Image 1 (tube, rainbow over the protein chains, first blue to last red):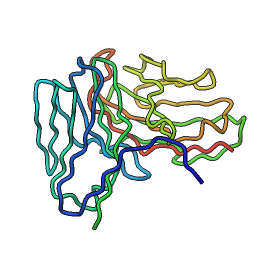
Image 2: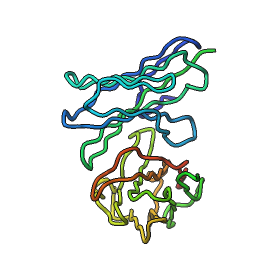
Image 3: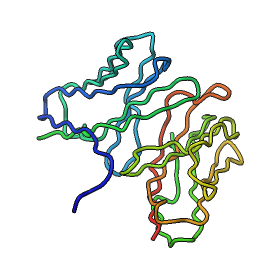
Image 4: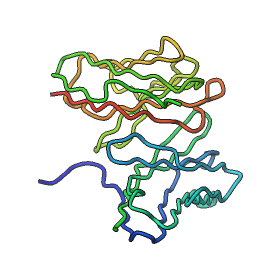
Length: 110
Length: 117
């Protein structure tokens, strides 16, 4: 039957390729941003963060880019692995306001 | 270090029953958050506490929902009476925040999967 619910954006990539997941945020005053990864049956897990005074931050295999002009955030995953398959959420923070995006579902094809 | 601890991990109950979800935040964190996640609505913030004081409960759906934080290491989310539409995964998260703030990185527990029949 037809399923009703959030239609998450989906991204399928081949193992070993790079992945780019995008997020548009709403509040130009937001000054802190976080990417979370949520695997099936688990809670969201912190991946990487960035403050509004930066436009790029790198971690292990992940890079976050922030474009404040167009209020856009992206997460780049290098050499994507099957274990990267999950839903990825961006979060924007301003003061005591905390907003999560709806998420993007990433599937890695072995 | 232990992360955020939630119990029970799974709960199946009948409509009209009281449900109590429990959370132990990470030691040293002073902010605690309760979220609900469903396929229909995604991840929703229900309420958050800073230094054991409720700061924002605007996400609590109805009077049937209540949350308490009697001390820095324990919080409960209670639903009374429960209804089938309350079926969801309930997450607790904690962080360190300056007074009144939502803090920065939130660390999530494994969630409680609630099914109300």
